[in-house]
Image (tube, rainbow, N blue to C red; front, side, top):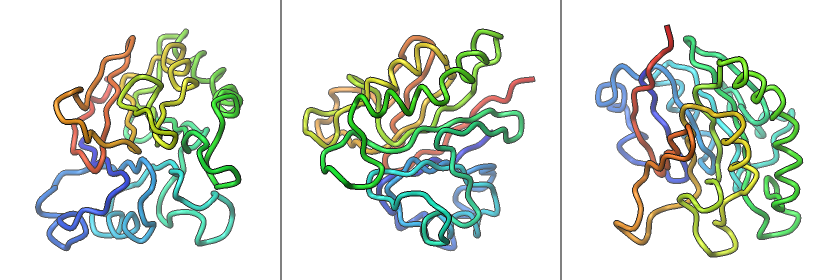
Amino acid sequence: MRILAVSDQVIDRLYSAMVKETYSGVQAIIGCGDLPYEYLEFLVSILNVPLFYVPGNHDPQHGHLVNEYVQGGTNLDLEIHRHKNIWMSGLGGSVMYHPGAPNQYTQSEMYLRVYKILPRLWLRAVLGHPIDILVTHSPPAGIHDDNDPAHQGLRAINLLLRLAKPRYMLHGHTFFYRQNLQDYVTRYHQTDVINVYPFRVMNIPIAG
């Protein structure tokens, strides 16, 4: 399945009528957070494919009002969804650096959030059917993260990867300002952790 993954930064060549020709064949959009909802809705409309996303630390708290979710999109946060035989789940938010702000959590709070979905994902892994893609906003601790308070990785994600064993994890939130120090793809146990900031087009093999 051909996927357009986006995160954190609006890209002019995507926010254009030419995107349909330039990135033809895209079958799904994955949003890793911190993007204007009108940008995501534009991509859904012009590419005419499903959008699956998680909220970032600059997004509004997800609720039931129209301006609190992306129209035409599916919020993967603590959910499991299937699209074209690709199984996906998600975990939104970042580490807390501004108390009271939406979608920010302490390391302990994020463990509690992970425990809400971990049993279902762990059981799938035990039965030999792990999810294909885990979508997050933040990176795991020690992988693609940074030392400043806002961009530390989340330790709960490391636990989730070890037990749920997704094939791929897509995240945003951090950018490689220190060039050449690490690749945008890092293998962690059985998962390819991929930093999609600001966007990447990739092909995810569909299981038979």
